[in-house]
Image 1 (cartoon, rainbow over the protein chains, first blue to last red):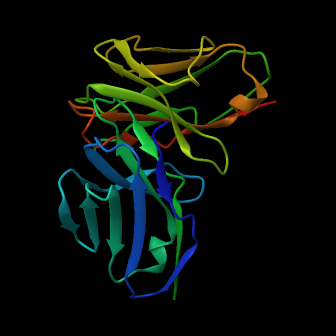
Image 2 (image 1 turned 135 degrees about the vertical axis):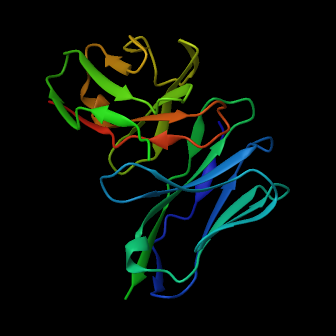
Amino acid sequence: QKEVEQNSGPLSVPEGAIASLNCTYSDRGSQSFFWYRQYSGKSPELIMFIYSNGDKEDGRFTAQLNKASQYVSLLIRDSQPSDSATYLCAVNEVYGNKLVFGAGTILRVKS
Amino acid sequence: EPEVTQTPSHQVTQMGQEVILRCVPISNHLYFYWYRQILGQKVEFLVSFYNNEISEKSEIFDDQFSVERPDGSNFTLKIRSTKLEDSAMYFCASSPDSPNQPQHFGDGTRLSIL
């Protein structure tokens, strides 16, 4: 059974700080990696995706991928109270037609 | 920005009844998916659909479930003889022309089985 693991949190950071969210995955051949934000009672909203080792930046968000360590992270700079949500890591399996989701990390940004 | 739309937003059904959840994927997308999320739990894959056939399904997707693309725009999930444990949020998603591309989710249908 392919697994995606995340620390459930909650991760609490002050407004303006950097939030660092981490994810590990078990399928070594996985090729595409996604971060979704989910507010309570709402659907997953795509934040970032990354395919290659290294960093990918989009505004305040940076996704980092290390395939050798099977590790994906999401950095949120200048965190805002509106960033408070559950962040879901999702991985597309090798030759797979599905996303495997982690349980999510709850982020709380305190003003 | 194009979006995935789902109807209804909330469905209440008696146990044992059939229910159909509807989705309109983004118009130029070719891959379609159903996921579910039981309250407080992970998002779980149910089924993927491409070129008018199921490309992959999970263990959850048993004979009780079926999917259909009845026309060029709609994508439906049917649950026959619903059970209490089918109560969950059901999300439809679509991706452009490869399963490795980002999947975009609809707002979901909350299914409550009484």
